[in-house]
Image 1 (cartoon, rainbow, N blue to C red):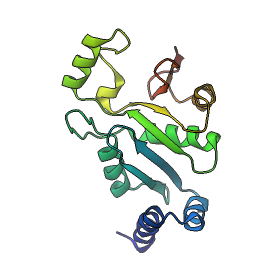
Image 2 (image 1 turned 30 degrees about the vertical axis):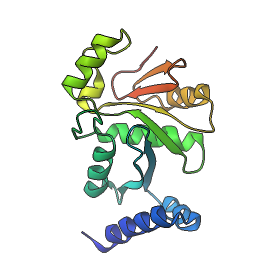
Image 3 (image 1 turned 90 degrees about the vertical axis):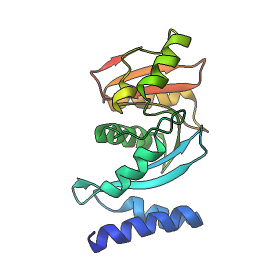
Image 4 (image 1 turned 180 degrees about the vertical axis):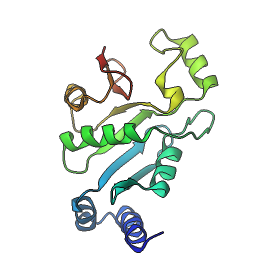
Length: 178
């Protein structure tokens, strides 16, 4: 690992562990970097990760994000589409300075998706969650309609609005909305 990446990863870990706002701001402000702050509502896990720097995705960060976005029901980890992370970054930058996105659902195993689809008409049998190309989110402190508007403005794929369930769905498929 090159020294800059090592420094970035160490800074992110230290800033997360100590919650030092100044370090978080300096890590985010570095030119050309993309950062996400995620909280998994089912597992209680959270992370702040610089996932893109120096013109490329950072494998260590992608591994950490894949784990956080795993299927919590089966504990199955899968590769998340890096373009979904870019889309989440575009949405999060519209919502404030380094906001925490609450993840309702990331990757879903085929078994989990089949169970959810059998229990609800709102779950697609061929969901993009199965491919690591979809995520359901909300953001505390922001209205769901504001999160929805940010997702639509990002124009990165499909956007579903579920006010009764309190989440917005984003995926990297074709542009569409429901």
